[in-house]
Length: 343
Image 1 (spheres, rainbow, N blue to C red):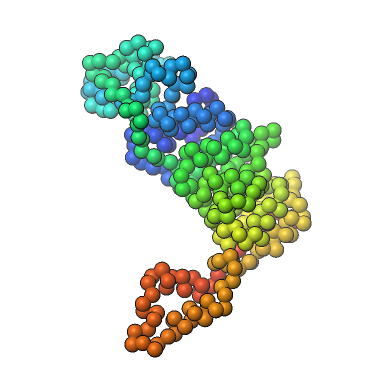
Image 2: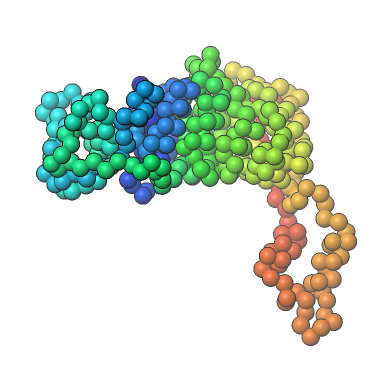
């Protein structure tokens, strides 16, 4: 999706998270554009009102109403924002129900979101009946949950990026963020701590040109189970990422199986930091924070091998206990760390 110009982010939020469709889009790619704090605020209002172009003026809060319109077959609607005079209007081929906004400042006209056409207008009455929302409407929650790619988008601040992710995603598994090559004045730092708050289910993270840092090691980061981190065109610090691997209180020190760092042709990362990160290549990843105590191991063995009763004890274990034993007995995963540079 190519984003440029005012209002595009609000329509994006509506298309992905609102609307009448039950379909959930598994993969979303957004290229170019600029995202600001005001854009995120409008997106938040879109999700709250379930409408792509909400009224933001406080003075009109008590007068306008959101709701739905029931449109009768054969009703003529007027398209908004269309320059071609030949298609200013169209006739609804069948009865439909659409999201709408009634603003008394526009008289008898009502604004309607029609699937496949966008924003339209019509007069109330006749074939258009407006049903306002209840005082506390409840809308179905739909968010991006599989893969999101943001390429060459300029973010006003890192907070704006994280707020947007928290708004439009839920259970996101894969995230890719690339900065523009000429966008040196607006490159933000991607904080893995705040990312763990915005996307707690994330498993695969790729960042290009932006720097990656860790501002805190609190509970959200401790629970983060990311498996793959790729740093493309990267010349920033690596020490924060290495510290995450050393910190046994962090889940990612045991879940992060793949790290790839690719510096650009015009620069390299700090040599010492590269060597410290590469020292973790081939690490066996423990299942738990601390080694399984020897007494606990003996207890597990005694349960498995016990035969003093007619029925062995192992036959009395449920699936959870058996799977736990198999996890501790299995060969641990090994971490792969790659640096594709001349250092």
